[in-house]
Length: 451
Image (cartoon, rainbow, N blue to C red):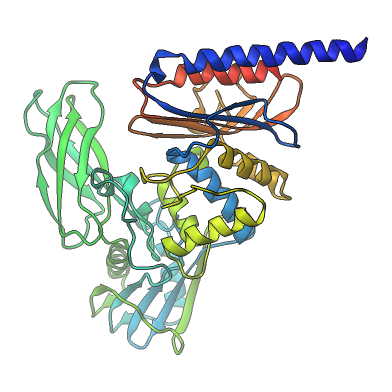
């Protein structure tokens, strides 16, 4: 009798989830969409929900879950990025180690420790140049497939071997009446050698940030277009054209303001440090903390830095190969999986819902699985999913990475059903009519309640 009761409950659960999946697929927001859905018990068993699970789709920022899971296993949880300061002949060399957090809390935030190291070494004057060396990674910071409309903005800041200030700068505009020019009144920090071409206009009050920054790696002219809302001053962020030069320039200025004269200039270049004197080593925050920033706040720079750090070559091509090799070795069929970056910003990234779920399943079962899960935000409570499913069955039971691009909305992660059983899931939607967020909440809530 007990077996029969369990069987009846199981049949009812499967029937209820089929109804939920059918309702989701019939939602008007998905009329033109390509959709992939896959839900799999973490500890093994058959999928409890699947639809077009082997269709290749754009993952958007759910790609970050793959990147962070890969980095945790290949680099190890004790991995730290290091930035080193050397005195090489007459030059002061900042040897980047890819740290994406360097200067992240302020332009001068890390410099007092560097200054103290110089003084301890008896350096009272820099006869040569202050050199930013970014050779830790390849010189190409922006992948070929990133959209032109993204690369000049803060979220399109690609990783350098010497990152600085999150590779971003701010632009502050003074707005006027609706439709009038918005005056550029401040940039911080000021990108060295850059001229600005301002086409920004004043939008209606409350219209938000609709401004775009057009530049790119090495750009000497940056233009701004779009609108910022009326009502006083408004700030947007752009991508630094040359983070290593910005770092060297900012440190040179800091030194001179603190009594150490620099006779040379701020420059970028590759410097041999074999015969140099090491003055200071700065270590990054823990890998776990960087992963949390990646997954909770969806920081593209963090993800793409972790991606390039997967191999000593420090290239996008080598990182993609290392990522594919790692998960293929664990038995994931990666047919059609195309990782062109670590952040998901490229609209040409391709993954299937099944591949994403199987990677997440293996990440959860790994010895570092609990740490990895903890880097994902919780639905209805934290990070980019702090409002997702709040007040529904999802709240507090779903750990998920969200992902969105134009007409792309995706979620992937883990959920705990009402029975206490844990599942890995992915819901990928591309080319929808309008945001399917509400439909996705209903679907995942049904999975939680039905399992």
